[in-house]
Structures are given as C-alpha cells and as structure tokens.
Length: 295
Image (cartoon, rainbow, N blue to C red; front, side):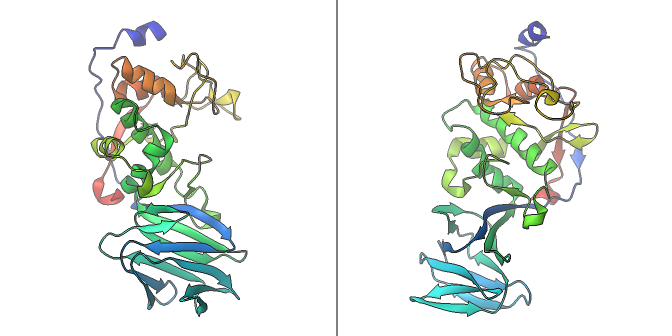
C-alpha cells in the first residue's frame, strides 16, 4: 500500500462533493470555566445583554478593560474602580461593527456568553465555524509550513469540530480551546497564509458511512501511525496504521490519524491536501456542508 501511494504522486485526486444539511450554524468554544474573575475588553463599543430578558444592561467603552466576577448567584462588573452588580447570571457581550473582544490576553471574533456557573464564571465564544477555524489552523500548525499541509489541517480540524459538536455540553459549550480538543488562539493567532487555507477549503469535511468523521490527528507519530484500537478501546473504520512520513521526529501525541509533521513532509514532496488526507484516513470521501447551515 505504501508503494501504491508513492506511485500516485502526479495523479489528480477526484472526489464527489456531497452537500450536507446538518444544522451546525456556529460553534461554541469554552475559553474559561469556573473562573474566579475574568478580564475582558473590546476593540469597539460592545453591548452587554441579559440573556434572560434580552434587554441591554451596559455598553462597554472601546479599548477599555473590564473585570467580571461572580457575585451572589449573579455577575458583577468593575466600572471606574467599583464593582456593580448585574442582575443576571447569564449575559452576552456583542461587539459592534465586527469588532473583537479580548479575553485571556488574546483577541477573538464573534459573540461571548458569560455565565455564573455556580463555582465561577464560564466564558463561551460563539462564532461561525469558518471563523473558528481561522484561529485553529495556525494554533495547531506553524504558519510557515506548506500551504497544502495547512489545507489538510483545515479540513481535518473542520471535520473534528463538526463531528464533536456538543462534546462538552455539560459545561455549556461544544469544545474547549486547548489541544485536549483543538488549540484555538482566536483572531490573535490568524495569519494570511492559514486564513487562505481555511477559505480555499470552505465547508469541506471528511465523511465515512455518511457521517462526518472526528478526524483525529497529532503532531507526530514517530515514523508510523497507530490503529485506534492500539490507543483506545476499538478500531475505527476510517483509521489505519501507516508510515507517517515523520521519521526522525520524536513521537508527540496519540499517533492516531494524520501526523501533522507527516502532512507537511508530504506537501513538500508535491502531494496536495486531498491526497494527504486520503492517505491518513481510509474509506473516506470529501463532502461540503451546505453554506447556509454553517455560516
């Protein structure tokens, strides 16, 4: 199989574009969970809206930092050196004019929900999946790497995200922002190169047996990837153990699915993103999510 793959270097990879109508609209990413205090700001004016009544509570000033903390079942915000109680346990922060919001010393796109979750504040970034991916690809893969490696990463990350919507619903979001799910650095992480990779693969996912797959990947497999059963409890129909094209690089991660270093090395050899993905994920097809459902 290794030799057969090496022989298709110049062959155009053909695939069917299947339009899904899976209602994924946007994705919710947990940035903070049960925090004792949270510091936030916005690049433009931003409205704070009560989730329970949908009424405007407060307008955050442009480029001004605010401290939030849980207070007796609700939320308090520090304004001009004094904490003021917000009579709500759930608020949404909406920047104006497509502005950015600062959390954890990074800028993010989208809207933000802040919830008094009992033990502290949970901050959730709610945004379209394609904008989320703009903050994932450069966080998961160096922006200096090959363009087709970035495109393969974008498709794998999109597939993983859609397949795992609701994974962390008990916390009030879909995925967290760490490599435990997928590293996500928001707008602060974006680069021109990686944003182009996301745009050029817009909506494209990997499917197996009619379902979007959680396209597992890791930094490097140390020369050979593993079957899922070698790491977890059972085999997966879309994963196979193959040479990972990352020889000489120390194994980093679970080694199941795509090796990111391997993807970059294959791209250097002239393989395109679709050839790379078809190599690491067996029995899969490419599909495109209907744009009206994921924007």
